[in-house]
Amino acid sequence: IYGTDTVGCFIVGYMMVSFGTGNLIAILAMDKLKPCSAHPVFLSLGFILNATVLVLTSLWKPDSSQSSELLLYTAFWGLADGTLQAQSQAVVTRYAREEKDTAMTIFRICQGVGLIASFLTSIFSHKLMTSLYTAMVLHVIGFVGLVLVATEVAKREKNARNELISGANGNSEAEQSAVSHGVESEAEMT
Image 1 (cartoon, one colour):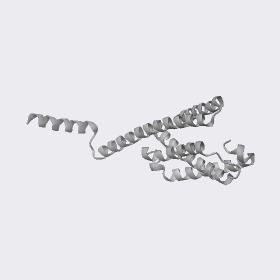
Image 2 (cartoon, helix red, strand yellow; image 1 turned 120 degrees about the vertical axis):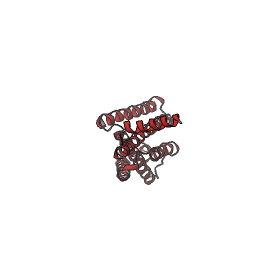
Image 3 (cartoon, helix red, strand yellow; image 1 turned 90 degrees about the vertical axis):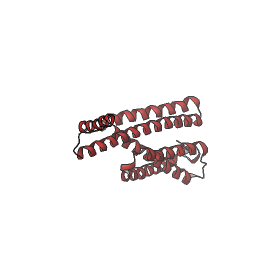
Image 4 (cartoon, one colour; image 1 turned 45 degrees about the vertical axis):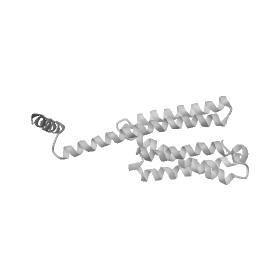
């Protein structure tokens, strides 16, 4: 585990508590911000936080006197992870409303494949930086995919609102189409 080789194995439990606390704070905050959590611009928050964690991991190697900094770092890591997980879950479940369980299962499988790719890269290359580069590339690919799905969700919801508004006005799509074609026909006649 990151940092245990210099600080010692005794810190692993504290790191787990720090990570879990940061994760919980992020999930509770994202629950309060649920209406906007799937907006493509808001998704950038989770991406930036996780990219920051990856960059910090590549730049900083804690020494034995930095145990408190390591705990703060793992709490920030938990915060970043919780933010991205909550946002991803919001987007995926809104995209596949009827098949939420299946969609989340497929999403978790994709995450697992990415984790395995990053882990195997670190084993075979014996370099942390290669593993971090792999994780960053997979992170960027996942973020782009998430933004594309969120954009599709936004389009669907906008179309549903427009249909609801047009239905509330008492006009069906066929009536609106006939009216617009009638207007075009009258314009062509004159």
